[in-house]
Length: 277
Image (tube, rainbow, N blue to C red):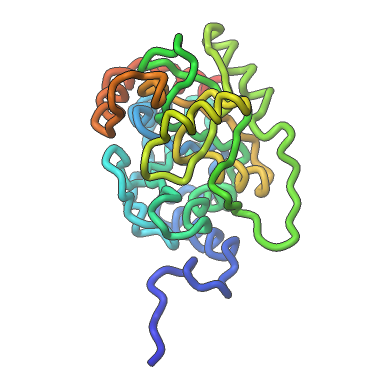
């Protein structure tokens, strides 16, 4: 007996870029906006930025768009917003992130990024809530991502596809962010598979190989964005110190609480950065 695949990206014969193009067509039809210039994925603590960057033209459920899944994580809103910026540019705000630990495969993790590129966006802003290794990064600290370590043992690239990641996290965009907020620190983000938090030994391993931030998203999305020819700006909200750096147990409630406290400040910061792009 044959079974029907419920998701277009679960079919190994499917072209993920064709699925992204279909999703972009859905967005254009449902929002009435033919093309977007900038895309933002707003992780834990960053969602309020969508209310500050400009005028919302349309807000649609992500599940109405080809290839998007309902977010599994509390704190992610599950919608796609088209926003008219004061500059006249159009921003696509992605509130529906599929995490690698959900087990749907890397194609679905990076579908939102590929869709953003298919809508015309040339800048991809990726944000997250993460654990910090530097002891001076208190919860609520925003940090620019300067590079990453991908410890998922996976890649969104398929076949003999070779993409240079030397300047994956754009020095130009980081420079613009620092012109808005000169005190911004930066560091190397490390993506683990999750959903468990890292052990103290794993955190020390990351520290020894040059990592400063630990989390469960962003790196795979950034690779897909670079493959699509996009310029990437990455920002982490330090929601807690990583295991072994912080002496108390880690919890998702702690991540959400830190995000809620910091949200007004970091969202306003991100809005100012977007306004300068």
